[in-house]
Length: 398
Image (tube, rainbow, N blue to C red):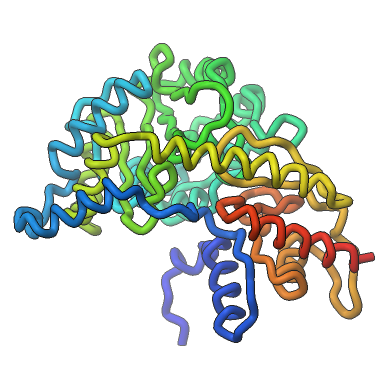
């Protein structure tokens, strides 16, 4: 008898993790699969960060439970980073360190939302936003950007989506899955829509801040009257190649930071003591390794753009940040090969996994059923091989 809660049954499995699991199953059977499905940097964590963790283990100081919201010296360093890099003034007591930016966002939704509260989600969006909102008994309201506008929803669309139930707005910049980056003027236009509504909280996911190929990264919290209604989310996974260390954080109005701390205290308590020492080293050490990684991603971006543009039926734009392409592939819906019929982009991704041995993620999981997401956080050799194989497999469809 199925006795699972309605809550857990109402949310889907993470599409990125599901596709990664299918790819692993094939690898276990001896099938070589090139995985372009996960947002996983293919670089190792910089040495000075690794060494800080080793020193923390050897110091015999960091075995006790850490403070729920993070060690004070780390929160001070994050506060200084916010002011120096982003122009944001969050005191250390407005910082909450969590087990990855994913938990940071979940804490905020659980702290803010009552049943039926609406959250405007700028779409395409990172897969877990909607599930987190549903788990907090809120209602996601999707406002969709299109490839013609670099997948950026417009202020007019946001204005039309506002209701008296709107509690928050969430977006990422640079964006996962599109790589789009909001400029200061674009953020100002969004802020202009929100300012009259003091009851609305902006959740700005800036986890890809250091992987930005265009203009200077901008934070919406720096704009007039926005800091006290903005939660700025960041972390160490992407820019510092620290996905497995699981360290994320928020800067937030004090009342939200206190609520997130309370929430985290009941669910997980504080983030790993050793991971926090590594994170402190990341902030205090050289940023050159991060810049070198970003340059490598930028070089791959140019390569992958040209390769994807050569595939018939792929509509591709040039992302300005992160390490993803999000091509529109509706051209292939309705086509077939033998007994295989492509009725959706999900079908197309499964076909490419089985026929080309390339793991991708359907855009439906990100709010756009005509697109797929390809991560170029892989070696140039793997990217060339994967896209050549995809092109060969797609040519079979008619």
